[in-house]
Amino acid sequence: MTHVTTQDAVRTPLRIHNARLIDGTGSSPVDDAVVLVDAEGIITYAGAAAQAPATTSSDVRCVDAGGRTLLPGFFDCHVHLSYAHGAHPGRRGELDRVLVTLDTAARLRQTLDAGVTTVRDLAGLAAGYRTAVETGRIVGPRIQTAVRVISHTGGHGDVRLPDGTDLSDGMSALADTADEARLAVRRVLREGADLVKVCATGGMGSPYDQPDDEGLTEEEIRAVVDEARRHGDKPVAAHAQGTSGILNAIRGGVTSIEHGYGINDEALELAAERGTFVVPTLSTVYAGINKETMPDYHYQKKVRWSGITKENIARAIEQGARIALGTDAAVGPHGVNLMELSYLVDLGMDPMDAIVAGTRNSAELLGVDDRLGTLTAGRVADLVLCDGDPLADIGVLGDPANIVCVVQGGVVRKDLIGAAAGGRP
Image (tube, rainbow, N blue to C red; front, top):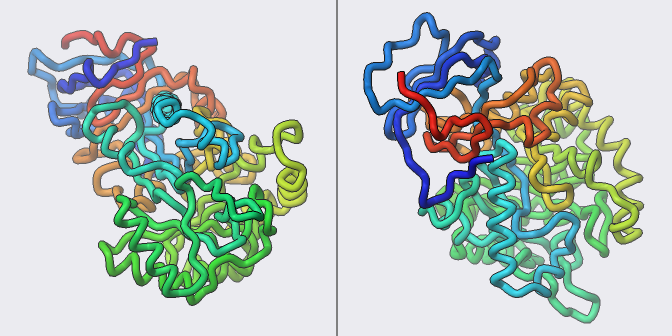
């Protein structure tokens, strides 16, 4: 496999031909398609070869897709890249900071190679990683990060020991009143957060609560949303698993419900009215349960909620909820992010709709749909070329070996077919 490093990255005009195009809009695939990308990494044409403009420049890199499927770069709207798979947040503090940094950079690369060109990290990832990717110091998905999660004392984000020893290692900020919640927002934004995350309920991995327990109150969530609005109109994501907390979060004005395991018809109706996204993170119940490695309290909660989750998210899919793709990677394995598409399809989503959830819908959630999420003229050239037909078998996208080429901003980042060498027209 060819990896393009930051030093090797070269952006030249691209012409990808002989492709089966799925553009992320939900439109039918286009066979024998061509995608043209200019020297700035912007798509100038995406469609049938018969209508494609002629390529005359001598410096155009031509890529023969060999009939493979070409899709937009995918999003994962819920990751924790600073943590290894299955690691307790406090365990990170046992490692040398240099090792944490290098391990995190490796997970960023692994995620990009899986076909994910943009991520939203929802606690634990310092804003410096975003800058490192933007400035070319490391290669990885472009990043939006919440830096920390805001929780109440004893809530899902409180990973302190009973004696008060703090194991959060940068993961959480505690707030127990509306005023403290406002202060916590100001602090995470000072640390460079692109969005704010709150705990509206308890959770699976937290030792002191249950998913049905309520977290921040509706009043406190409203204060967070208002404070985020006052400082750049930042979005707010809510960890919300139990029904009461989901309703509190939607009524409080959050942008997205993360997990949504206990979502019911009332919550779905309210979310539809307000345009609230749901990020189901099904990987946590399909691939995130391991009795051998999980504390018993965590395992028991997962087993108890697995069936409930599948039933409720299946109903959300059936009712047309506004779903974006997220995995909660770290709870489940890193680097197989697009297996989440298979889980959505398993619960009733059409494969094309699952692809749209992971591209256009996710771009809308992150507020970048004017630049990313679809393969249409004027958008940034984030492209994924895969073996197999994901509309016949969505699972092909979940195996990184099938992701044969990844282009990010017009730069070939992963290459299993010789695209980096390319040809000339």
